Image 1 (cartoon, rainbow, N blue to C red):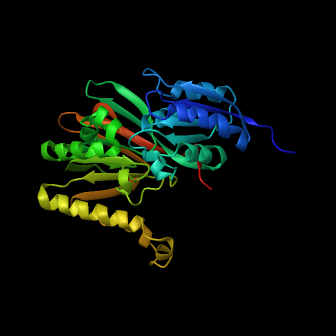
Image 2: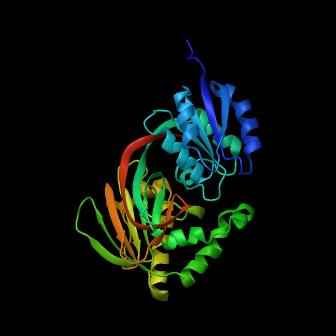
Length: 328
């Protein structure tokens, strides 16, 4: 006997283009995959998804689909932690970093809905962070992709929202160039898993759950979304030579990631975990990381969302703390 149909909840960011198509396609596709009675929730400025996801899970739905950018996806994920309800993703934002790292279809609402409704469930890690902002207030949050203090957060803060809506992730290029020219290095100390403090000056300190950025650029090649580890990068590039070295390493990592599976299988043991490390780039891994900015507060971002400034933070990985829907 076939299992009884289950309800699906769809949480949409109403400010994003494509919301009407999401509603129409959901109603059309749900019965094709054994889902019934789609219920729609809209995010608000005061509640970008956490409350809606919590309510949907408490109402007994079998699947929650987050439709929006990385901020919406992160908030919905936070509401589903501990519920056992899987999350699907329909990327409608600019970065769509989680979708990229999970190979969820981009720029195709119907295909993304199909993956959400008929794909397989996969347990992925969830980052948990507690940070103190520049005003001394403490905040608790989660992250699915990465957080960062310094240059990357400055770049996000300096990107025009209207330009993002018009040209997508290309809007970050100008902000990157501006940050590169005007940015400064931050003095920071950090440690992993209670180990010794590492003191450095860096353009950015990045803590990641997965490592792919826009355009398929691989920032952290060893970052795997279900390995139970955080990947930490101190970007210490200084001067033209330092940036050339850092850029060459990132290009190498990206091409390495794109190697065909056959080539990877024929590579020497451990080749896939190889990473090129130079003075401008310091890679480390651990279950937890604590960091403190030693001079003035640094700009801070979580999953591509501007979060003001930070003076200190601690982050830990929650092993397979979230279930997501991915392609078979």
